[in-house]
View 1 (cartoon, rainbow over the protein chains, first blue to last red):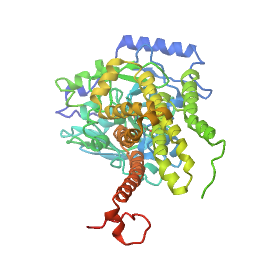
View 2: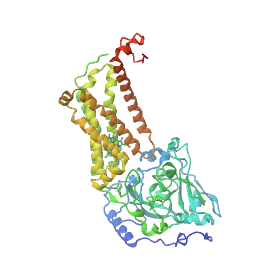
View 3: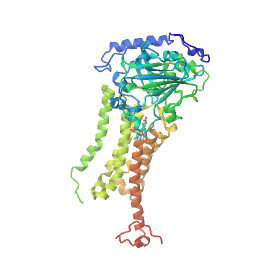
View 4: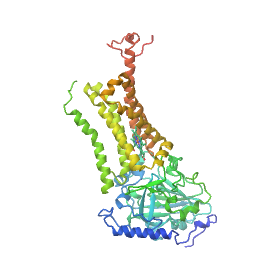
Length: 311
Length: 226
Ligand code: HEM
């Protein structure tokens, strides 16, 4: 398949297949994994699946957050507002069968069955840091495909500048939709060059298993240098557009949640500081890192931008 | 209606007041030290919220004593109002301690910045500061010493309830249902008091109030234009 290169796409957006990441960080993270593997008793329940995958951007003392926390401490307002609501209230929700539409400014718009949508790409296991805008964080072993694969296949036209994602609207099985807490369906967006970055994943699994409903089954976005709310769940539509898309949290509170939502310790949320974060399962707070520790790979996407204004 | 006060009532109420605190101490303590998840994956945040919730609940209970006593005729309830007020104060202190010690972990810069930059913290802190004189003057001795001024001073509890509700309202991320419920409850309790004060005020001016002609033995509360 030939891949069209839209003329106005910055050259950095078309990325080499190899991912550039901090080699030292990788080695240190590998060491941390080895240590956590050597201490089987630490923070793992009996049914704790083993975290496998390539670590990206992990710091030396980053260890995968236990499965029980990854799957029971979730923000997924379609199933309720408490962190435990998504696990408790998503039993009736059906992530199969699933169809995904890719449309808008693409040369090959299509509606796929999920299996066909995924088939051309190789599923990869990657361990990423995850930072919520609420100042807590995790380390999560995701399974999925690079979003860039999907976008290249759809062939964005020259006008496409942004990618918009939409969550399924299933009021019968998503009790949270009854309350007008956010504008439903949930939407999110990325600039096209951000979306093409090789770190961005469409995840279908976590801890080597299919995504549980509460984590955004069957398909969710993972953008490790942005706050977690950018990681839209249960995606059934991907639309290329020339306008900055409306995003759910930006619509809800534009002064608190920007379109970019890059992790930035220097820009406070109006109601709390972003200097530090609580890693789930740890007591002492950790300093928050610019771009959540992925600055080396992604800071260039924002060269020349005022990140205080474009928060 | 005159059910006498059971002899065990005071102790039972005291025990009840301690239950949420014990639950929080056990749950959060075990989560932090033993890795359990009684308070979920983020026990410090959950504990902070839990104690804030109980501060507000005990404020509601404190303010509900007088109407409850008047509506039911159980006048001995008044003796227990102080216990509830002190419980609210204790939970507020615990709420603040969890915030300062466990959440912000005594990062003084962060504590000061929070106080200076975050209106909801400022408002909560004002509530806390205002509550200190009430706790200090809650003894029988102080009550006697202050006389009428005690009553006036302790009306601050309405201001504190208002500030606490505002603080809650401003702290939530999106859904304000819960703080709105507290606001409604406090509004009803406050209104009850206002109506009462107005009646008492009218009673104190019998010339104006007595003539309404409705036949009530005392001022009925209807305003009569002179
Ligand atoms: C009258 C005084 C106060 C009352 C009634 C009160 C009550 C509450 C309530 C009900 C909540 C929300 C709990 C929930 O979401 O379930 C809360 C949250 C909170 N309060 Fe207070 N509070 C008071 C004073 C304070 C003070 C003095 C501080 C610290 C200086 C404080 C710090 C916090 C913090 C940090 C949160 C959590 C915000 C978040 O991260 O979600 N509060 N409080």
